[in-house]
Amino acid sequence: MLLDVEQSQLVLVDYQARLMPAIFEGDLVLANALRLVQAARLMEVPVWGTEQNPSRLGENPAELKAQCRRTLAKMQFSGVEEGLGEWLRPPAAPVAGNARSLPKHLQKSVSSGPERNAVVIAGCEAHVCLLQTALDLLEDEFDVWVVTDACSSRTERNRDAAFDRLAGAGAELLTTEMVVFEWLRSAEHPAFKAAQTLIK
Image 1 (cartoon, rainbow, N blue to C red):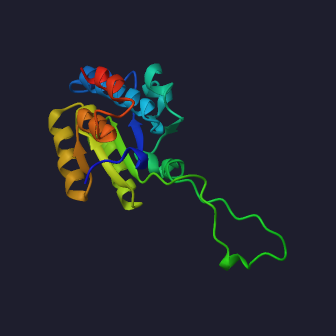
Image 2 (cartoon, rainbow, N blue to C red):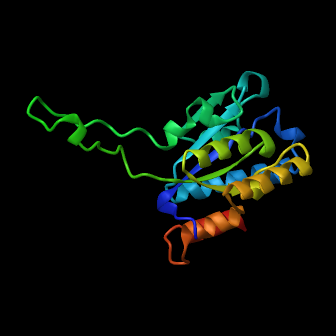
Image 3 (spheres, rainbow, N blue to C red):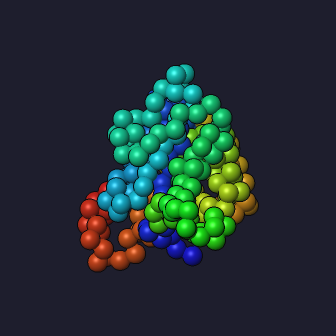
């Protein structure tokens, strides 16, 4: 199964100023996160962010945060525990009506927009905040795609253990380039040249 750009949303987890210097391959991980967010903007994929205890760990880099529709400041390790799921799948709007309308149990609610059930997720630390957020998203019946080269932890062992657990739970593991080319699908896509420049 390929990743569908029309069904995708991107979530960037905790690339924070005081955390990144301690992250294994932190510079490479952050560079791939920037590529992801730029590709998402080119192809009109909604982007969301989270920050763990930002008063202590600082904010996400300005160039990432500026591309996010919203950034969730959280204390729970899982962003879903603090409302991320509602951002990704907003509740349907109730149908307006009057006293002569159908009874409520016969009314169909109106969606607030097309549903995007594929959550492409990347971030730090892979074995804590990213893992717990991704597992909660799977439990909430999202399709979860973890971008391995845009994720890390303070140690390689913790990062790899997170990937093993996520794959076992049903998440798809892929790389930044896989995401970009699956979103494009064709060299004839209008964003192909710009996206290709991002990954060269």
